Image 1: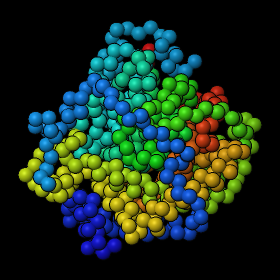
Image 2 (image 1 turned 120 degrees about the vertical axis):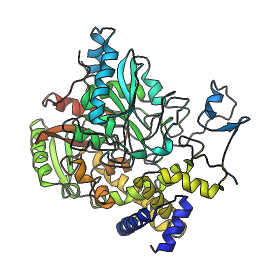
Image 3 (image 1 turned 180 degrees about the horizontal axis):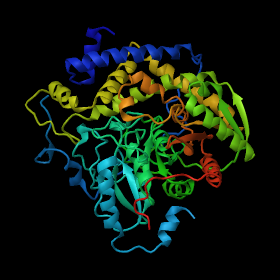
Image 4 (image 1 turned 90 degrees about the vertical axis):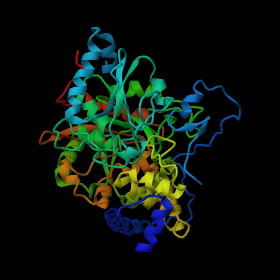
Length: 90
Length: 447
């Protein structure tokens, strides 16, 4: 992975890296990606993807309103203004 | 009688819990098993929760700066199900978000109670250390690729990872959705049996939690997979062969078999787990949970990028790696292929597990010193997961149990069975415990 491609990837991840971190991580990721190449040797193209290790059926919850005993608590971890969560500028 | 029943049958003075907390705080200064100790505990059998399991009103940090200050206003189903017979003792240390094999990816790594120069294993580092420190205690721990087995093995305790889907994950802070499992670390298989009986069952808050009978289909054949044996350090191989001999004397039949694909399981696992981790960690942006970056005048791209600089180095590495394997140009080559390879591995392992258990040492190396693992490259570190990754990738239940001691440090073996046959391997370890006495250096809270 060249430097430009790595920078683009880090930008997509929205992670600011120092120059030292960038050099180290890029080298390590290159090494790991080369290692990932071993899966190309596995003959499994005719099989279904296993998104979960067992069949789980993916039940859904009934769509209904419920009382929640601590609705204010949901906002306790954030900075709020007039019951809105304050976030960065868009 | 397991230690939970024993504890309940013993008379305890009013000063028992305050004294336990004081002893624990002192020990924690050396071993760093806990991120938080609940000084208010006054009743029940002491249990701890790994710091990625939510307990209402107690900070949950996943040992990460990015979650510092996050206090959930609800408890995980696993915590609620333990009920009033159990008392919440605290949140245990871990590798940041579960990213690690040795427990060192934490601001203050947990240290092994047998010798504090050595690692505890990870990522449930504090859960295993706490269990090795205390006479009466069970830990709720979490495994994604071996995070229960590895520390259980290095700390000389029993680590049970249930069948995928058997225990609700509601209230667990995710790392890899198709891999994460809440399990138990305890001092005996009896304690595991008692505790897991309370945790199982469907949960309307977790659609991946299944309603399935748990079997106890005992087997007498033990499969040793040649490809796993090849990665063993010589100092592990000899005691493991001795264990197999003892099990043969107990009536088990050992069969050595080939399973080529198992040698590629680590590659498959790190593709899937990094991909899932990179999406799960996208929610930590410096204003909604925990860490408050606070510079709201910055535009959101800068705000997020600067706030997320608080992740540790291993978390950053996995987010970038996971984003790469999911990117459109290579997704088919890595992520989709890995999901199909997982299907093949499940099918091949099931072929063996219908006729017996798979057994191996839990870790391929003896317990390393903390300073030794700091020098490993990521790839060298990932390679040490070779034995714990296959059952985790495939959702099979497994238990790590101590079977020998080298230079005063414990070593563990891992027994794997088919989906939903969990009680059979708990029974296997109970049988082993009738012939082998575990050693502990500490017994805090003894009565």
